[in-house]
Length: 154
Length: 282
Image 1 (cartoon, each protein chain N blue to C red):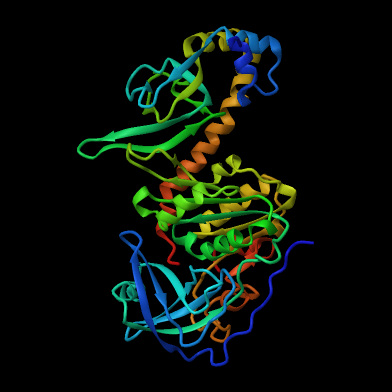
Image 2 (image 1 turned 30 degrees about the vertical axis):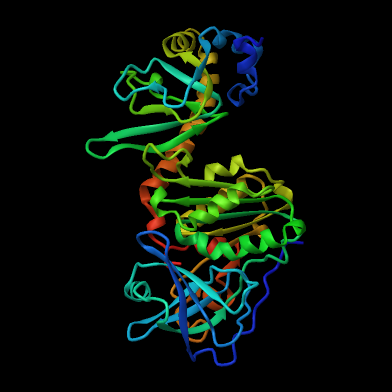
């Protein structure tokens, strides 16, 4: 049976991470399995975790009264889920719901923040891995906000 | 050698529309419809070419052909009702007539792409001009490497060719990913912008030809993402429709730097238009 460090080692997030750092952050991680419909976190709740998706898909949603939930992004295997654990007041901005059987590595945000504070080298390694996908998501969100598909005719 | 695009010969009387009956009308979504026309004589075309459709008493617009190139006795067009002419075309029914001129322009390099992996990326109504190329690739599947289609739309309700998307999804050796910008809880597919899905497709960037059709904002972003993935800009093809009027390069309305979109396009090799796409004044 694989331990958490083995699972982490095979995730794209850990690519290029030295063994010492990998073992250090693995101490904040656990393996989780979610059934379709399970929520990883709810809007407004404490953002005390982030996830590395190993298999499956998670929908990020917000709720509009009278109209129901709207999904604005799906996160899939190999990707990172959750950024609110990085920024005070550590509160989840959106719902995150598994849309299929999902396996993920869950990190305790407080534990990891503590290790980053204690060793800036670890913090820098985490930043290098978090910033690129977050910037890409920001760029994509801007394109979505433009409503560009409305423009063309045929 | 990068694939090259061949100019086509315009029809003998290119400014004279022929009265052509609508034989079938399909509502794709709230704003988008498809109709078939039965031209007087068989009208061969290349995937990616367009016709000028005239709504009598209203006006004429360029519309890409969205049907199969191996059925030249039936011309299929898929249109979003966004202006007076397209809205008038949307009120037609089987038996009504439109004015038809064409086909015009330079299409997708489907012949030149033989032997390559092929990616097709469509945004919104941009899937319609790509559909003839998809039909072509499926019909001549053995002549190509891996084939992948990315399709982005606003919402699940805005998707077009829904039953075909389901068929393509089940087609062996054919990759399809569909992303919508927002969806309700019943949607289990991808939600988000379309270009990040490139990483989910299998292809060899060194031997891939890519074809993009959609709004220009999307074309620019997608072409850059394809380049970042290692695909040469000379193997990226984009379809653009700007100000087309006469369809034969005479009136000059569609002039785009040294090019006339209607005559030299609508499909262009990206390395030849990338700088022009950056000009805000054009």
